[in-house]
Amino acid sequence: MRVALVVPVARARGADTAAQLERMWPCVEHARALARQGADVTLFVDGPRSGIEPLGDGARVRTVGLFAARVERLVLTAAATRPDILHLFHLRATPALLAACTVGRTVAAEYNGGPPWRRGSALIRTATRRLAVAFFTAPEIAAPFEEAGLAAPVATLPEVSSRRTSADRERARLRLGYEGEGLRLLVVGRRTREKGAACVIEAFAEITREVPDARLTWASWGGEVGDVSDPRIVVERVDDPQRMADLYAASDVMIHASHREICGTAFMEALQSGCPIAASDIPAFRANAIEGAVTLCPVDDAAAFARAALDLAARADARRRAREGFEAELSFDAIARRRLAVFERLLA
Image (tube, rainbow, N blue to C red; front, side):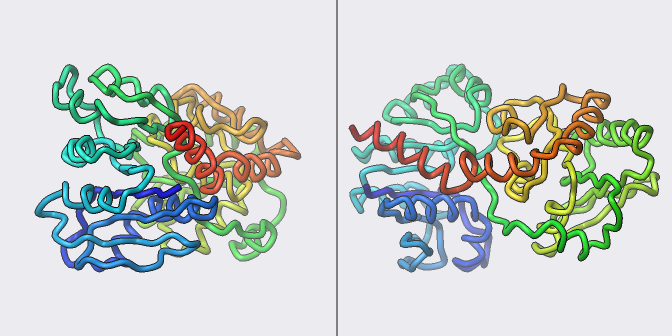
């Protein structure tokens, strides 16, 4: 099966191809995973000049210059290679969708964030009338788009997975200086209302009433978190991938209290590292929850998060379930197998 993956996103001014690929790393990992499953895969991206080079695992990347001047050029260049499937990595890129409708190929698209379209738009009906399938992390996330006029059938797939290398738990705890058997909790993300910051702090206070020596690390990958007054909460801005991997591996439970997520990169990274999660009961987490490793809690219910974290920490099999469930259902290879199964049904 020949698959053309199109990323209709303009590169940053002055960025080279390597910087563009790092910026869109989930698309790169999806391409490589599809190639590992036997597909003939080319990733089409905006670049400083046109060219083709290896991407890894048998996939290739084709850069198309002057993308910013005309988004349709990227789609038409991909279609000219006569793929079996033309897949857009941004459902809301309406000009790219309109161009894809003209190429006479089997077209798929994936939602990668952004608000729903305005309801009743004739443009949306036109842009999606020949779309064979639209991928969303969860059906509830697709619903506003269907109400707005999305005509294509919907399939569910995680929008992202984890590319981190899972660290050894004991070595990670040694590197981080975690001593003894005290409960170690982790939060990853900015300290904002949308991330459930107040709920996390209240839940941690509940936990420490039962486990006084519990400690919480509040980490932000490349962003600021801000200070907190509780000395048992360590705030850390992380820039080193190894340290982030160690934090996941060394923690007993991650608390993920977001109000909304498209998919949740930290959610995936924690499970890949074997870290169980007390998570908000929102569509993205509900769709990807691993039984025995993820406990869903009502949004902003601090007491429920506290109970879930303590219960998961006490489960002897939670870490194993997290790792095994991730590899079976949520890894890039698992997602690629599911995506190819959809593509094969479309072509059949």
